[in-house]
Amino acid sequence: MKNFMKVVFLAAFLIFFSLFSVWAFDENLYGDLTDFLNNIYGVDKNAGLTAFPVLNIPFGGRSEGMAGAFAAVSDDVSFLEFNPAGSSMLEKSELAFFHNNWIADTNIEAIAYANRFGDLGFAFGAKWLYTPFTEYNIYGERVSSGYYSEGVIVLNASYNLFSGYYFNGLSVGMNFKGAFRIMPDYTDSFDEIIIGSGDSQSAFAAMVDIGALTRFDLFKFYASREKNASAAFVIRNLGPPVMDDPLPTVINAAISYKPIRPLLLAFDFNIPVNLSDFGLSELPYAAFGLSANITDFLTMRSGFMIKAGSSRFNIGSAIQMEKIALDINYSLDLLTQLQPLNRISLGVRLDLGDDNRKQTSDRVDELYLLGLEAYSRGNFTDARLCWEEAVRLNPRFDPAIEGLVTLDNREALMQRVEDLHRLDF
Image (tube, rainbow, N blue to C red; front, side, top):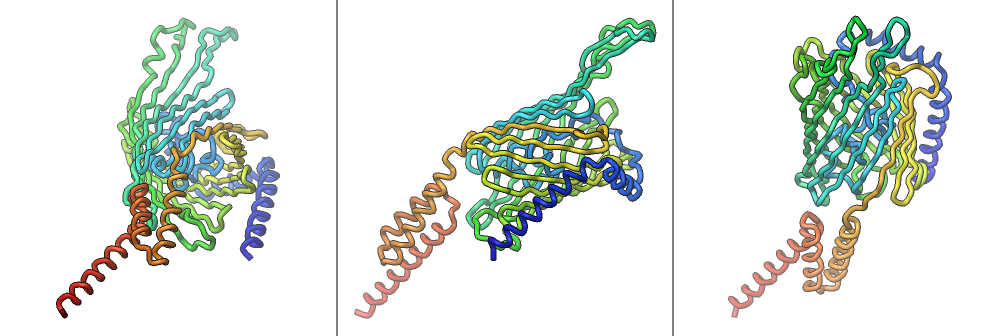
Protein backbone atom coordinates (compact mmCIF):
# COMPACT_ATOMS: atom_id res chain seq x y z
CA MET A 1 0.00 0.00 0.00
CA LYS A 2 2.80 2.41 0.90
CA ASN A 3 4.61 1.72 -2.38
CA PHE A 4 1.38 2.22 -4.28
CA MET A 5 0.85 5.61 -2.59
CA LYS A 6 4.38 6.65 -3.48
CA VAL A 7 3.78 5.79 -7.13
CA VAL A 8 0.52 7.76 -7.11
CA PHE A 9 2.17 10.82 -5.55
CA LEU A 10 5.14 10.75 -7.93
CA ALA A 11 2.90 10.22 -10.97
CA ALA A 12 0.74 13.16 -9.93
CA PHE A 13 3.84 15.25 -9.38
CA LEU A 14 5.28 14.49 -12.82
CA ILE A 15 1.93 15.28 -14.44
CA PHE A 16 1.91 18.58 -12.57
CA PHE A 17 5.38 19.46 -13.84
CA SER A 18 4.42 18.62 -17.42
CA LEU A 19 1.32 20.78 -17.28
CA PHE A 20 3.24 23.55 -15.54
CA SER A 21 5.94 23.56 -18.22
CA VAL A 22 3.37 23.90 -21.00
CA TRP A 23 1.48 26.59 -19.09
CA ALA A 24 4.59 28.55 -18.08
CA PHE A 25 5.47 29.20 -21.72
CA ASP A 26 1.95 30.37 -22.53
CA GLU A 27 2.17 34.14 -22.11
CA ASN A 28 -1.62 34.60 -22.27
CA LEU A 29 -2.25 32.24 -19.36
CA TYR A 30 0.49 33.83 -17.33
CA GLY A 31 -0.82 37.30 -18.09
CA ASP A 32 -4.39 36.33 -17.22
CA LEU A 33 -3.34 34.94 -13.85
CA THR A 34 -1.12 37.88 -12.96
CA ASP A 35 -3.90 40.28 -13.97
CA PHE A 36 -6.25 38.35 -11.70
CA LEU A 37 -3.81 38.59 -8.80
CA ASN A 38 -3.22 42.28 -9.44
CA ASN A 39 -6.97 42.89 -9.39
CA ILE A 40 -7.09 41.28 -5.96
CA TYR A 41 -4.02 42.98 -4.52
CA GLY A 42 -4.07 46.15 -6.54
CA VAL A 43 -0.82 47.99 -7.20
CA ASP A 44 1.60 48.17 -4.31
CA LYS A 45 2.25 51.92 -4.21
CA ASN A 46 5.12 51.39 -1.76
CA ALA A 47 7.07 48.99 -3.99
CA GLY A 48 10.59 50.04 -4.88
CA LEU A 49 11.15 52.44 -1.98
CA THR A 50 13.96 50.42 -0.39
CA ALA A 51 17.68 50.38 -1.12
CA PHE A 52 19.84 47.57 -2.47
CA PRO A 53 17.51 45.47 -4.66
CA VAL A 54 20.28 42.85 -4.79
CA LEU A 55 19.11 41.79 -1.31
CA ASN A 56 15.80 40.63 -2.80
CA ILE A 57 17.28 38.60 -5.66
CA PRO A 58 18.13 35.01 -4.69
CA PHE A 59 21.43 33.25 -5.40
CA GLY A 60 19.69 30.41 -7.18
CA GLY A 61 19.77 26.75 -6.20
CA ARG A 62 17.01 24.84 -4.46
CA SER A 63 15.67 27.89 -2.64
CA GLU A 64 14.94 29.75 -5.88
CA GLY A 65 13.45 26.62 -7.45
CA MET A 66 10.90 26.61 -4.61
CA ALA A 67 10.15 30.34 -5.19
CA GLY A 68 11.76 31.35 -1.91
CA ALA A 69 9.62 29.07 0.29
CA PHE A 70 12.78 27.93 2.04
CA ALA A 71 13.12 29.43 5.54
CA ALA A 72 11.78 26.27 7.20
CA VAL A 73 13.50 23.91 4.73
CA SER A 74 17.06 25.30 4.95
CA ASP A 75 18.71 21.99 4.13
CA ASP A 76 21.42 23.13 1.73
CA VAL A 77 23.83 26.05 1.51
CA SER A 78 21.24 28.37 -0.06
CA PHE A 79 19.73 28.66 3.45
CA LEU A 80 22.16 31.58 3.82
CA GLU A 81 19.70 34.00 2.20
CA PHE A 82 16.57 32.73 3.93
CA ASN A 83 17.33 31.57 7.48
CA PRO A 84 20.63 32.09 9.33
CA ALA A 85 19.70 29.28 11.75
CA GLY A 86 20.18 26.67 9.02
CA SER A 87 23.93 26.13 9.32
CA SER A 88 23.79 24.24 12.65
CA MET A 89 21.37 21.67 11.17
CA LEU A 90 23.11 20.95 7.86
CA GLU A 91 23.94 17.31 7.26
CA LYS A 92 27.02 18.00 5.14
CA SER A 93 29.50 20.77 4.48
CA GLU A 94 28.96 22.48 1.12
CA LEU A 95 30.72 24.87 -1.22
CA ALA A 96 28.55 26.30 -3.99
CA PHE A 97 28.82 28.62 -6.98
CA PHE A 98 25.82 30.31 -8.61
CA HIS A 99 25.09 32.27 -11.77
CA ASN A 100 21.77 34.06 -12.33
CA ASN A 101 20.98 35.98 -15.52
CA TRP A 102 18.45 38.50 -14.28
CA ILE A 103 17.03 41.46 -16.25
CA ALA A 104 18.45 42.07 -19.76
CA ASP A 105 22.26 42.29 -19.38
CA THR A 106 22.14 42.17 -15.58
CA ASN A 107 23.88 39.17 -14.06
CA ILE A 108 24.45 37.90 -10.54
CA GLU A 109 27.41 35.78 -9.45
CA ALA A 110 27.59 34.21 -6.00
CA ILE A 111 29.62 31.87 -3.82
CA ALA A 112 28.65 30.27 -0.51
CA TYR A 113 30.26 27.88 1.98
CA ALA A 114 28.78 26.23 5.07
CA ASN A 115 30.08 23.81 7.71
CA ARG A 116 29.31 22.75 11.26
CA PHE A 117 31.03 21.20 14.24
CA GLY A 118 28.53 19.39 16.43
CA ASP A 119 25.80 21.89 17.30
CA LEU A 120 27.77 24.91 16.07
CA GLY A 121 27.33 25.96 12.45
CA PHE A 122 28.96 28.69 10.43
CA ALA A 123 28.92 29.92 6.84
CA PHE A 124 29.96 32.76 4.62
CA GLY A 125 28.85 33.95 1.21
CA ALA A 126 29.16 36.76 -1.30
CA LYS A 127 26.92 37.96 -4.10
CA TRP A 128 27.65 40.47 -6.86
CA LEU A 129 25.14 42.07 -9.23
CA TYR A 130 26.48 43.97 -12.22
CA THR A 131 25.00 45.60 -15.32
CA PRO A 132 26.56 47.75 -18.09
CA PHE A 133 26.20 51.51 -17.54
CA THR A 134 26.61 53.44 -20.78
CA GLU A 135 25.71 57.04 -21.68
CA TYR A 136 25.28 58.36 -25.22
CA ASN A 137 25.00 61.95 -26.37
CA ILE A 138 22.38 63.29 -28.80
CA TYR A 139 24.56 62.20 -31.72
CA GLY A 140 24.64 58.58 -30.53
CA GLU A 141 28.26 58.78 -29.45
CA ARG A 142 29.33 56.99 -26.29
CA VAL A 143 30.43 59.51 -23.68
CA SER A 144 30.51 57.38 -20.54
CA SER A 145 30.74 53.67 -19.79
CA GLY A 146 31.34 51.27 -16.96
CA TYR A 147 29.36 48.94 -14.72
CA TYR A 148 26.76 49.66 -12.10
CA SER A 149 27.16 47.02 -9.40
CA GLU A 150 25.82 45.97 -6.03
CA GLY A 151 27.28 43.35 -3.74
CA VAL A 152 26.62 41.60 -0.44
CA ILE A 153 29.03 39.82 1.91
CA VAL A 154 27.55 37.51 4.57
CA LEU A 155 29.12 35.99 7.70
CA ASN A 156 26.94 33.43 9.50
CA ALA A 157 26.93 31.62 12.83
CA SER A 158 24.26 29.50 14.51
CA TYR A 159 23.87 27.08 17.40
CA ASN A 160 21.45 24.21 17.93
CA LEU A 161 20.05 24.30 21.48
CA PHE A 162 18.61 21.27 23.30
CA SER A 163 19.28 18.82 20.46
CA GLY A 164 18.81 15.17 21.29
CA TYR A 165 17.39 11.89 20.04
CA TYR A 166 13.74 12.76 20.58
CA PHE A 167 13.91 16.52 20.05
CA ASN A 168 15.84 17.80 17.07
CA GLY A 169 16.68 21.01 18.90
CA LEU A 170 16.02 24.70 18.44
CA SER A 171 18.59 26.35 16.21
CA VAL A 172 19.16 30.09 16.51
CA GLY A 173 21.43 32.00 14.18
CA MET A 174 22.55 35.36 12.90
CA ASN A 175 23.95 36.75 9.67
CA PHE A 176 26.21 39.80 9.68
CA LYS A 177 25.90 41.44 6.27
CA GLY A 178 27.59 44.26 4.47
CA ALA A 179 26.20 45.58 1.19
CA PHE A 180 27.82 48.02 -1.22
CA ARG A 181 26.70 49.95 -4.28
CA ILE A 182 29.14 51.29 -6.90
CA MET A 183 28.02 53.84 -9.46
CA PRO A 184 30.38 54.82 -12.31
CA ASP A 185 31.00 58.48 -13.08
CA TYR A 186 28.43 60.14 -15.31
CA THR A 187 28.42 63.27 -17.53
CA ASP A 188 27.12 66.79 -17.22
CA SER A 189 24.93 68.69 -19.72
CA PHE A 190 28.00 69.29 -21.89
CA ASP A 191 28.74 65.56 -22.18
CA GLU A 192 31.81 65.92 -20.01
CA ILE A 193 32.44 63.24 -17.38
CA ILE A 194 32.12 64.61 -13.86
CA ILE A 195 35.08 63.13 -12.03
CA GLY A 196 33.93 61.55 -8.77
CA SER A 197 30.21 61.98 -9.59
CA GLY A 198 29.55 58.28 -9.13
CA ASP A 199 30.80 58.45 -5.56
CA SER A 200 27.83 60.61 -4.56
CA GLN A 201 25.49 57.75 -5.49
CA SER A 202 27.66 54.92 -4.20
CA ALA A 203 26.93 53.64 -0.71
CA PHE A 204 27.61 51.00 1.95
CA ALA A 205 25.14 49.41 4.39
CA ALA A 206 25.46 47.13 7.43
CA MET A 207 22.66 44.88 8.60
CA VAL A 208 21.84 41.59 10.33
CA ASP A 209 19.50 38.66 9.84
CA ILE A 210 18.10 36.83 12.89
CA GLY A 211 16.51 33.40 12.62
CA ALA A 212 15.19 30.37 14.49
CA LEU A 213 14.51 26.87 13.18
CA THR A 214 13.19 23.65 14.68
CA ARG A 215 12.27 20.24 13.25
CA PHE A 216 9.71 17.74 14.57
CA ASP A 217 7.44 14.85 13.56
CA LEU A 218 3.88 15.66 12.49
CA PHE A 219 1.37 13.21 10.96
CA LYS A 220 4.24 11.00 9.88
CA PHE A 221 3.21 7.94 7.89
CA TYR A 222 6.62 6.48 7.13
CA ALA A 223 9.49 5.18 9.26
CA SER A 224 12.53 7.41 9.46
CA ARG A 225 14.65 9.09 12.10
CA GLU A 226 14.53 12.25 10.03
CA LYS A 227 11.88 14.71 11.24
CA ASN A 228 9.20 15.31 8.62
CA ALA A 229 8.11 18.85 9.58
CA SER A 230 9.84 22.10 10.48
CA ALA A 231 9.00 25.66 11.46
CA ALA A 232 10.98 28.88 11.25
CA PHE A 233 10.87 32.54 12.19
CA VAL A 234 13.25 35.04 10.58
CA ILE A 235 13.89 38.78 10.44
CA ARG A 236 16.03 39.72 7.43
CA ASN A 237 17.94 42.89 6.52
CA LEU A 238 17.60 44.61 9.88
CA GLY A 239 19.64 47.80 9.80
CA PRO A 240 19.68 51.61 9.49
CA PRO A 241 18.66 53.42 6.28
CA VAL A 242 21.21 54.26 3.60
CA MET A 243 21.18 57.76 2.12
CA ASP A 244 17.64 58.17 3.53
CA ASP A 245 16.45 54.96 1.84
CA PRO A 246 15.37 52.11 4.16
CA LEU A 247 16.67 48.58 3.75
CA PRO A 248 14.25 45.86 2.54
CA THR A 249 13.54 44.52 6.05
CA VAL A 250 11.25 41.47 6.08
CA ILE A 251 9.63 39.44 8.88
CA ASN A 252 9.15 35.82 7.84
CA ALA A 253 7.23 32.87 9.30
CA ALA A 254 7.50 29.51 7.57
CA ILE A 255 6.61 25.82 7.77
CA SER A 256 7.55 22.73 5.77
CA TYR A 257 6.10 19.22 5.73
CA LYS A 258 6.87 15.82 4.18
CA PRO A 259 3.67 13.74 3.80
CA ILE A 260 5.78 10.96 2.28
CA ARG A 261 9.53 10.53 2.15
CA PRO A 262 10.14 11.78 -1.44
CA LEU A 263 7.78 14.80 -1.32
CA LEU A 264 8.42 18.11 0.47
CA LEU A 265 5.91 20.96 0.77
CA ALA A 266 6.78 24.44 2.08
CA PHE A 267 5.00 27.70 2.82
CA ASP A 268 6.51 31.09 3.71
CA PHE A 269 4.60 34.23 4.75
CA ASN A 270 6.50 37.52 4.55
CA ILE A 271 5.75 40.94 5.99
CA PRO A 272 7.94 43.77 4.62
CA VAL A 273 8.67 46.52 7.15
CA ASN A 274 9.80 50.04 6.28
CA LEU A 275 11.75 50.98 9.41
CA SER A 276 11.86 54.65 8.38
CA ASP A 277 8.08 54.92 8.01
CA PHE A 278 5.84 51.93 8.79
CA GLY A 279 3.09 53.48 6.66
CA LEU A 280 5.29 53.08 3.58
CA SER A 281 5.81 49.32 4.07
CA GLU A 282 5.10 47.06 1.11
CA LEU A 283 2.17 44.63 1.15
CA PRO A 284 2.66 41.17 2.70
CA TYR A 285 3.34 38.31 0.30
CA ALA A 286 3.54 34.52 0.38
CA ALA A 287 5.46 31.72 -1.32
CA PHE A 288 4.54 28.08 -1.87
CA GLY A 289 7.12 25.49 -2.82
CA LEU A 290 7.40 21.77 -3.40
CA SER A 291 10.22 19.37 -4.11
CA ALA A 292 10.22 15.68 -5.02
CA ASN A 293 13.00 13.13 -5.19
CA ILE A 294 12.23 11.34 -8.45
CA THR A 295 15.27 9.04 -8.20
CA ASP A 296 18.39 8.92 -6.06
CA PHE A 297 20.10 11.30 -8.46
CA LEU A 298 17.23 13.50 -9.72
CA THR A 299 15.15 16.01 -7.76
CA MET A 300 12.41 18.20 -9.24
CA ARG A 301 11.01 21.32 -7.59
CA SER A 302 8.53 24.08 -8.26
CA GLY A 303 7.22 27.19 -6.53
CA PHE A 304 4.84 30.10 -6.73
CA MET A 305 5.31 33.45 -5.02
CA ILE A 306 2.22 35.65 -4.71
CA LYS A 307 3.28 39.28 -4.49
CA ALA A 308 1.50 42.44 -5.60
CA GLY A 309 2.82 43.44 -9.00
CA SER A 310 5.57 40.80 -9.16
CA SER A 311 4.20 37.31 -8.71
CA ARG A 312 6.68 34.66 -9.77
CA PHE A 313 6.64 31.03 -10.91
CA ASN A 314 9.62 28.72 -10.68
CA ILE A 315 10.47 25.28 -11.91
CA GLY A 316 13.79 23.55 -11.47
CA SER A 317 15.75 20.38 -10.97
CA ALA A 318 18.90 19.08 -9.36
CA ILE A 319 21.13 16.31 -10.63
CA GLN A 320 23.06 14.70 -7.79
CA MET A 321 26.33 12.97 -8.60
CA GLU A 322 28.67 11.43 -6.07
CA LYS A 323 30.13 14.69 -4.74
CA ILE A 324 28.62 17.33 -7.05
CA ALA A 325 25.06 18.59 -7.47
CA LEU A 326 23.91 20.70 -10.43
CA ASP A 327 20.94 23.03 -9.88
CA ILE A 328 19.00 24.49 -12.82
CA ASN A 329 16.03 26.82 -12.31
CA TYR A 330 13.68 28.54 -14.71
CA SER A 331 11.81 31.61 -13.42
CA LEU A 332 8.91 33.51 -14.90
CA ASP A 333 8.07 36.79 -13.16
CA LEU A 334 6.74 40.28 -13.78
CA LEU A 335 10.08 41.86 -12.90
CA THR A 336 11.64 40.57 -16.09
CA GLN A 337 10.64 40.70 -19.71
CA LEU A 338 7.86 38.25 -20.57
CA GLN A 339 9.35 35.92 -23.12
CA PRO A 340 10.58 32.32 -23.22
CA LEU A 341 13.15 31.51 -21.85
CA ASN A 342 12.51 34.18 -19.25
CA ARG A 343 15.27 33.70 -16.70
CA ILE A 344 17.58 30.81 -15.86
CA SER A 345 19.90 30.36 -12.92
CA LEU A 346 22.62 27.74 -12.60
CA GLY A 347 24.31 26.41 -9.49
CA VAL A 348 27.04 23.93 -8.67
CA ARG A 349 27.19 22.52 -5.13
CA LEU A 350 30.24 20.57 -3.95
CA ASP A 351 29.71 18.00 -1.19
CA LEU A 352 32.66 18.39 1.21
CA GLY A 353 31.59 15.56 3.50
CA ASP A 354 30.10 15.47 6.98
CA ASP A 355 33.27 15.27 9.14
CA ASN A 356 32.42 11.61 9.93
CA ARG A 357 29.09 12.56 11.58
CA LYS A 358 27.26 9.72 9.77
CA GLN A 359 29.95 7.21 10.70
CA THR A 360 29.80 8.30 14.34
CA SER A 361 25.99 8.12 14.34
CA ASP A 362 26.08 4.58 12.92
CA ARG A 363 28.62 3.55 15.57
CA VAL A 364 26.42 4.98 18.33
CA ASP A 365 23.44 3.00 17.01
CA GLU A 366 25.56 -0.16 16.88
CA LEU A 367 26.77 0.29 20.47
CA TYR A 368 23.23 0.88 21.69
CA LEU A 369 21.98 -2.32 20.05
CA LEU A 370 24.92 -4.29 21.42
CA GLY A 371 24.05 -2.94 24.86
CA LEU A 372 20.44 -4.05 24.47
CA GLU A 373 21.58 -7.52 23.42
CA ALA A 374 23.91 -7.75 26.45
CA TYR A 375 21.14 -6.48 28.76
CA SER A 376 18.71 -9.13 27.45
CA ARG A 377 21.27 -11.86 28.30
CA GLY A 378 21.70 -10.47 31.79
CA ASN A 379 25.23 -9.27 31.05
CA PHE A 380 24.79 -5.87 32.70
CA THR A 381 28.51 -5.04 32.80
CA ASP A 382 28.87 -5.29 29.03
CA ALA A 383 25.61 -3.37 28.56
CA ARG A 384 26.98 -0.54 30.68
CA LEU A 385 30.26 -0.46 28.76
CA CYS A 386 28.45 -0.26 25.42
CA TRP A 387 26.06 2.48 26.54
CA GLU A 388 28.78 4.53 28.21
CA GLU A 389 30.80 4.44 24.98
CA ALA A 390 27.70 5.46 23.01
CA VAL A 391 27.15 8.45 25.33
CA ARG A 392 30.82 9.39 25.08
CA LEU A 393 30.48 9.57 21.28
CA ASN A 394 27.13 11.36 21.47
CA PRO A 395 26.38 12.92 24.87
CA ARG A 396 22.79 13.63 23.76
CA PHE A 397 21.86 10.12 22.65
CA ASP A 398 18.85 9.74 24.90
CA PRO A 399 18.21 5.95 24.51
CA ALA A 400 21.70 5.10 25.83
CA ILE A 401 21.31 7.65 28.65
CA GLU A 402 18.00 6.04 29.59
CA GLY A 403 19.66 2.60 29.51
CA LEU A 404 22.35 3.77 31.94
CA VAL A 405 19.67 5.22 34.24
CA THR A 406 17.90 1.84 34.15
CA LEU A 407 21.13 0.07 35.11
CA ASP A 408 21.75 2.56 37.94
CA ASN A 409 18.21 2.05 39.26
CA ARG A 410 18.62 -1.72 39.04
CA GLU A 411 21.92 -1.64 40.94
CA ALA A 412 20.40 0.64 43.56
CA LEU A 413 17.46 -1.73 43.96
CA MET A 414 19.74 -4.78 44.22
CA GLN A 415 21.84 -2.99 46.83
CA ARG A 416 18.71 -2.17 48.84
CA VAL A 417 17.56 -5.81 48.71
CA GLU A 418 21.01 -6.93 49.84
CA ASP A 419 20.95 -4.46 52.74
CA LEU A 420 17.53 -5.74 53.83
CA HIS A 421 18.83 -9.31 53.87
CA ARG A 422 21.73 -8.23 56.10
CA LEU A 423 19.30 -6.64 58.55
CA ASP A 424 17.25 -9.85 58.73
CA PHE A 425 20.31 -11.76 59.91
